[in-house]
Length: 170
Image 1 (cartoon, helix red, strand yellow):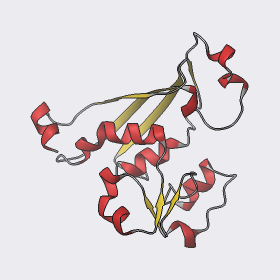
Image 2: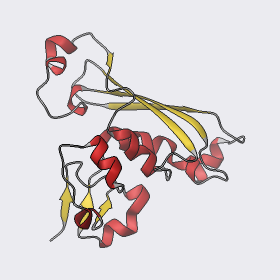
Image 3: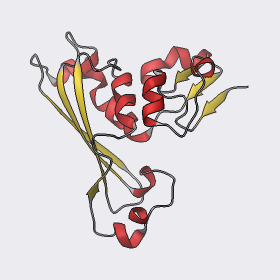
């Protein structure tokens, strides 16, 4: 039987990051080591053979995929990266919250959980720099007055000129 964990309990490999961003969720190290991060673009072979797969976060997936081709170029990603993420209310968590109620969301855009969003360490991990040694991230999610959808724009300074053909090749 294959187990796909839809919670965030096994997304982060680093137990200290998990404890910081998911304090309500105990994630024993012995179990965490069994799980493979479930993004095929990163771990296709491991997912195919693993019994335990950790489902990635929605905003983290969009952010990682936005920059994944750059990680394969010489030098990879360095410096500062800003992720400007937009999501509908279904992407803002499962809990009942006043700010997610339709009358509060209608015709309103708001940033939330800046500088402390749970997906930020997941994004760094997915882009191959979990500890933030090569690049720093600023992840700013915004709630849009729509029920579904995600749109991420990433801003960074490239260390070399890159053509569209270079990116497509990756």
